[in-house]
Amino acid sequence: MTSSLTRYAVIVDPYSSGNQFAMEFARDGVRLIAVLSSAEPAQVYAASYRPQDFLKVYVAPAADLEALASELREYSPICVLTGCESGVELAERLAPMLLPLASNGLELALARRDKGFMAAAASAAGVPMMKQICTDDFASVQRWRVDNGLAHRHLVVKPPKSASTDGVSKVNPDDSLQAAFTQLLDKPNRLGIVNDRVLVQEYLAGTEYVVDTFSYAGVHTLCSVCKYTKLANAHGMAIYDRMEWVSQDDPIIETLAAYAEQVLNALEIAWGNAHIEIMQTVDGPRLIELGARPHGGGHPALCFIATGDSQVHRAVRYFAQGLIPPKRFTLLKQMTVVFFRALAPSIVRNLDKLYALAALRSYVDASIQVKEGQAVPATQDLFATLALGFVVLANDTPQQLAKDLEAVRQAEAEVFQQDMQGVA
Image (cartoon, rainbow, N blue to C red; front, side):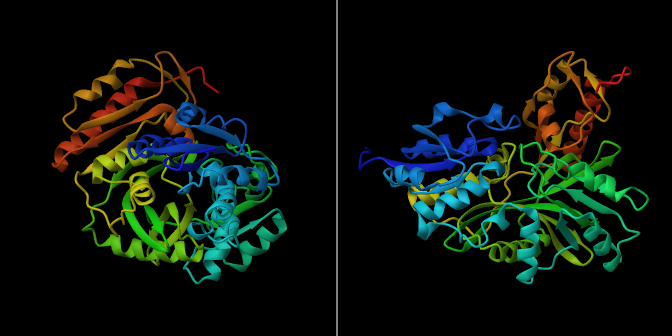
């Protein structure tokens, strides 16, 4: 069936940043097999799917995977990698069937996808965590809230298997927690998964970071650390404003790296990529959530510009070339991603002003996903943010970087003009 001289890699749900594996593996002569968790990608991922990059595309059966695994064994794959969040569960089940010595343990496979089980596993391993409960019983939430002294505190409500801040809301003390809970329970999220339970968490104050890693044989390496700035308004509690790469010399790096390793070990992640969101609070770091896959939204390509490396590049070099990755990273450029925001329902006008941002001294790249005259809703989550686009800025002079960031915001205000008739 296959040539002994040809090497193959399996990518599960090769969407979002997962579509970047193809070009990098091709450089090493490795051919790719795609395995899809459903016949069609979720709508939020459809635009990033490139079936032409794959020698063969398989759709996994809903139940028994053995027949699929038997066929995939014929390729003797060098690795099984997850492309994006929707593929995590399938990849965690499939990898041990194909590469038992290069896969994560099955016992905590669900905890690497479901945020409720994730929190329970991390807590059981002694990782410092926020207070939270995941259940389908609102009476249990009420008791938990009182027992933990959170009756008059802000809370966060989210689906246990969402992605990109989909369905995440902040509940103020005077708001109806039950209404927020009921709004999610038994409803499908943006990935098409029905919320069989709801996750309720204490609201954390602090600075949010994302730690991106690549692990091999239980050794964890740090690919990058970025700091998020987010907005909260009537439309959403975590609207992305910007993301900036943190220098390897920043004292926070070792604190975050040590905590990330605790989380990875608690979830028995020994192989592959992880995207770990951590809030640095007055009490120390606390896990928000982990994705057992690369940082989405095309981040690895941007990370390569900032550091000369990325999760995708490290994974490919390790599995295709046998090269051991470094434990840390080096920031080559001060770099920021400025996300476009529609702060109210808007009509896109003067779109040329976004394209004109290419003349900024700090300009590196941009993603402009809107068209002139397009109606856009108020931005609520990261999926909606990426549907608008972003600008990547890099400059060694902080003053110039700040000036160019302000220019992006000025252009944004002129392009996303509030629709006075109220766009839905």
